[in-house]
Image (tube, rainbow, N blue to C red; front, side, top):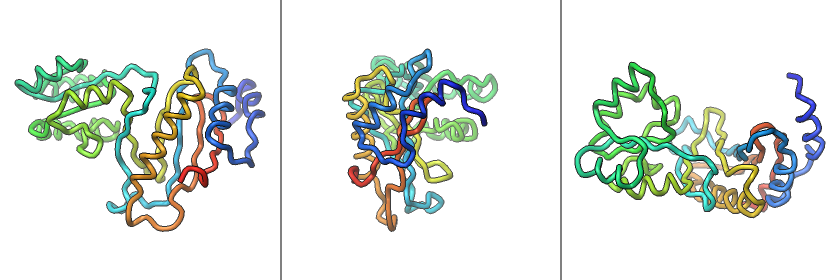
Length: 230
């Protein structure tokens, strides 16, 4: 695929053979971002695990100290007191069974994260085929199946992100925006990496962090020296 002139210019800032310290990588990613919008800064983490085995799954959630720079819409499946609590905590949408046909039949997906109380998972389960592939299914490990809906909503609004392996054993997550300061991006990145390293499965053998790349939405990837992370 032919890359645009802007990307080609940005790519000149990166030495493909070099492994950068986090602070250096952040500075390059910010400098190389040339789009007319505030690009998202992403981390792509390749792990030495086999996610096909349940005992080598890596999944969890972490609150980034400076958030992601994105306004997140939260949908909560709850009833009664818990529904009222979710509304009071600032959930964007709250409901129960009545939301199922809206999502199933009308294709309504105007939300970024789904939280559910445990007693609502039977209802949410009916939406598994739609929510699952989009990574929207509530999960206890990510703190999105919980009775403490206030904490769940507050954490998400404060910048909580979920991380999980894709089919190629890579984790893709946002760590902020190009408009963030270098210190904010580095803080967020170190917090994420701390969580991922802590989540290393006992069954994982050999090198855990295979490669870590930081990039902006339209910019070139910058490889990070993993030896200094673990």
